[in-house]
Image: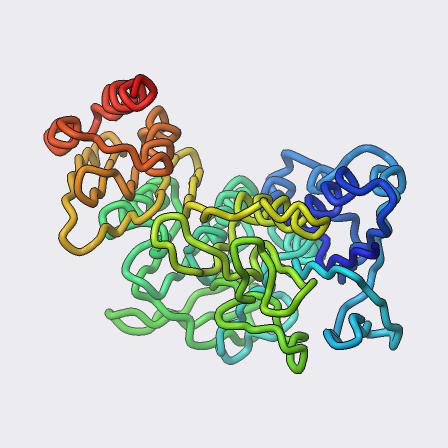
Length: 422
């Protein structure tokens, strides 16, 4: 049996390792399009901070790991899939055949249509090559403008702040991390960044990046409700979101929407072709709908489930992955889980303590906790996730939480013990 995996990120690597675990004799090949050992993009900011060397971003650290497992690594880009003849075409003109194919091609950064964005000195922060270029320019005191303040952008922000640059962040929405946090939480994070000497423009838009005739590399035009501001920059970083890498699927017959549509076994509409990770439009635990969740825990889960089904263990199913985000922004811990925006007709409660940099918001559907947002309440992170994922009926504890959302520990212990006894 020949297993071919497109993508050398966490999902592809985990799938390959588990295929080998279940099938000792199978042929396994991972095709990655970067000239690097398989690595985690989420580790790049920690490398920029200086906490780890480049090797620290690698997914596996044992010398000869993939050779020892008889997993072949190939540095090429797939440009076409021929699902009828079960082969993929590479940029070098070669073709690789397969019996089972896993598409774990991940995602790529979105580049906003800003004049001047393609100039040298304007970078995304998505690859190790990007990290090397950023490290060369992000010296202490350098003026850096980051476009975007979403989840990934805030991880990059943390790294830049630790490098002692003069940092300005521009976000189009009315708050930071808008797809993870409500208005109160997103603006608390903004206030925290300002408190840490980072300039933040929300409701802002970079309209032009041009070469400067002064001591700095660029002049950057930022439009806000108050008018247009001209900012100096030695480095501009774009962090305005990502989209699944699905361009090469044209003509393959594989169904795509926002990502590749998969079933509960991570299989596409075409027999023997599976998808996993950032590229897969998988089942959401809370809504039951299918969506792309570009987070590493989801990628890992997808890779394991896909591997089991690729080797014929068809009982492996994805019951749905929970939307979860935990973020450290220069020491301020924030998180959101599940349906943090709530549902129509549902109840909610919140406790705001801005002077203590603490906030908690709980969302209910009936007497079940379905979503949560928190800042500063690190002791409740696991409990919130556990209650949401277990879908436990809170009964009278719902009213206690509506009165005081900090009683989460008591609610969790009482309700889980009751469920166990039953």
